[in-house]
Length: 116
Length: 112
Image (cartoon, rainbow over all chains, first blue to last red; front, side, top):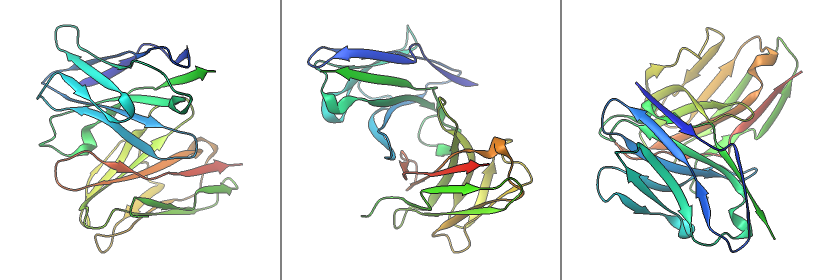
């Protein structure tokens, strides 16, 4: 069984300050993990993915995430927030990608606000 | 635009009416997925096609829901006798073999 928890439903940061969006997962096998971003009226966009290679994963737009097996976490970070980062962020856990994508589990999402 | 395309973007319907949504996946993606997203929640898996074969259906997909992908290209999702609880964003995604999926912008359904 798999599950994913996003510890904050809403995060607010000032422009130029660091972003931390927290994600913890539960999985009975070594999972693949993703972060997706959803801007208003736009489709879900993949930010980054972890698939059992390097534990520190770099994504688009300056985001990165670190897989920590001992803490079952996959937190998303960015050194400096930009106004355009304001969106909904989803942490996703799945079986290893050798299986189909129907087994993915989305977290409930974290809404990120960026204050000018 | 070569991304996943969904039509319509918005649909308002009266309770009890039937609605049909269309999804055009990225060309040559053999896998196509439907998800439902309600307000304040992450997307939930509904069903999945590999080419024209429907391989998996979630328990969320009641008998009033049916999905097809007749030629292994575009897909339709029909909801019969809509209920207010069907109000949600319906997302389509596609992928090639064993990689992450690419999502469309979704169809927002409002049942009044």
